[in-house]
Length: 501
Image (tube, rainbow, N blue to C red):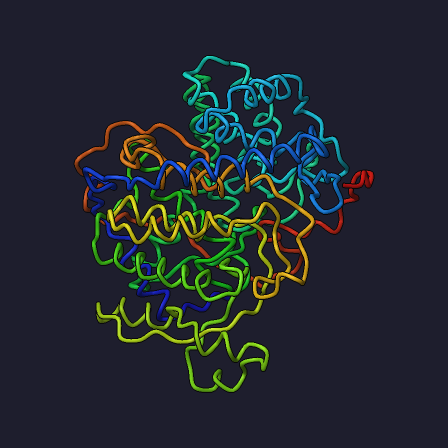
């Protein structure tokens, strides 16, 4: 059964206020320093070099294997990098690359997977559907084929709801027989409505919005039920679509839950409907401190790039568990820990930061730290965030690293599509482009970094009334396989031919 910890209860207490106020996200009159243009050019050059390697060794396939000079089809063989990168191409002014990508997308058969793998509902939505619909908007809606191909793909993925009355979709669909497998998590189930509602907007078919909102509403009702019984808590992570029950006791705001929480805000903003738009300075300040904390993971390594995972020290016993090889890093890096966030949530003061040490030293070109940094810049106007982005440009690697503290440990032999769609986009445009371009007051980024135009904000969101929960929500013990947290391991996919460098 689900067990709810006090820190998470307090977190949800702040995150589920019934009255949701709107307001500008960006501070007005942001001004760029003279160095901004040079940094933007540097990021565009990194994009060009990376995409040139993809075009040479992997074009038409999903991901580049840069060390092997080959490719891997880890997203059903439809050319994930091509589709995911289109929005960045448009925003960076690479029109020739976009036109070539458009020609590719036009001829893809999205009704049939090109690999033996099943189709991942979440990943396919945020990368393929999000990529095509964002490109449609960013090009002034000139290319309806992007909507048509999105609709073809979503019509097949709609079989994730295997029965008419099913609320939560399955996480995987077999495109050969439209069967479903695997339970899902709340991030997978609750991170569809931004893209699927956009498809409804451009096709006139409300079915897509209705399907994607059923699962979000179900999960929200669980939250409201907890509020009704004075239990301020985050939702469990795993959920079984066959009976709508939450599975096991794992609760987190990390991978597997994070993008659902993200879309509570983003869907409300892009649709101008009810949602969790708080306009709350306390929460903003907590976010800024966590962003500072995460930036320290970059500033404290030998390469200037942050590790995949690190461990906070939040009690005395953990001081004796630091690996010997991590003692130097542990002594220098003082990252904000989740316990101090918990303290702040209760007392509204932040008293301590604690050391930490690396537990996963690889770098797979993730965007999250850089994305948090750009949000902080646009929200505060503090130029320290631009300085951080500039330093990231200097050390950004076209290839991932096996160890951020030891360059000699070698390079990662995979470049996922989000490197083009999100990492390079948020590093370049929001930081070093004119702040009025893709303003956070006018646009919403999906969880893959795809950009969508938002309508003018409402003055107030929500009625201020507490929603009355309906139904009974229970959890059960996990009995089968659980979905992998993105990006999943690639070892089960055979690489393409070894072409040589």
